[in-house]
Length: 331
Length: 126
Image (tube, rainbow over the protein chains, first blue to last red):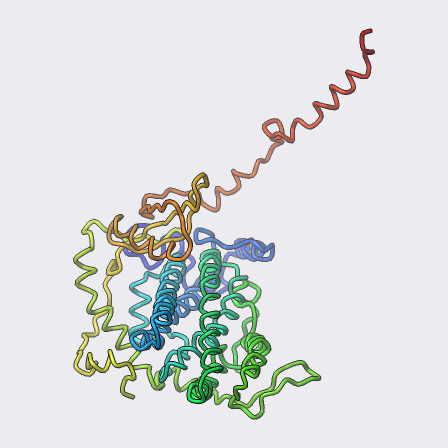
């Protein structure tokens, strides 16, 4: 367990293997454990593909939390009053805290925190696409805190039924904190929606700009997604992108309409026969363009992140003990 | 596009010229496990882990990370490297293979029954 290991020694025989190359007996035992509803812990045997997919997923989630704090953090200095400022600071602190919890969960699988941050800064690892859009007005922070966090809660509650112990524990804590974000966001939205005509117009404008990124939030439609049968069996993926998107629309479209706001999609409606929401194509080309680096804020987000790492380096070095050795977090 | 954040505008990011150096191992220090006692009289429980340069900083960061919303009465941190734990393979030894009812309260459920039988066989003395 000591030294700067990417992978612990016991994992190396496992490294790079395809599922078909895994020890069939161990694989069967692993799958039976998940089937019984038991969790997998970091010290258990697991197929390489499970480890790889979980690292990818939890790491992306961690990056999303830390980058996600940036668009909202922009508005701390310009919050409309002191209580809102305190609440926004608390929310942003929570998001950064979530990143810490998630980085630790991913580390238990064998990738160090430094490697994850390096991959974020080099653009190798992704984060949630929605945070590549700017928060232009105060109303944007209200829409983010309500609807983007609502999406995140659906996503995270779904994932918290997963099979990997450290991720599940982190998510339970995160969901508990997100419930404050959602209430705070809804309160901010209702405040603007019931305010002056200018406040209502500002809110409608924010909704207009955020609706498309929100529709992108759960990822490309199932028809464009790769086959994930194995990940479903391993309880890494618990619902499809479209299922989560439908759940979001079901829960939040009526609430948005209740405020008298207009959702900028004339084709949005619930089909009474299928019980499913129908909507215009939210331009998946834009989604891919932005995720691949060409969004309005991609450069700024990574520049700010790099600035923080670089300018904080001397502090971290000054504090570091020469005897320090890296150890994978326990659980 | 230019930043909409006045703080970033003031910092003139185009002049930052941040070198593109990767973080070295241990740049973010080493790991600690955090234990938290919620109320007096309860056991301290493991709540997660964190990165810190030394135990004192670990405690400061643990307070920030694990107690900022819900109160507790005491907080512990332990370097992860100091923890010795059992393995998955050893899990089996905690499941008794033989009948161990002799060491459990459930192993002594018919005591009363025996006494009752005895009492009813012998008439009470007059």
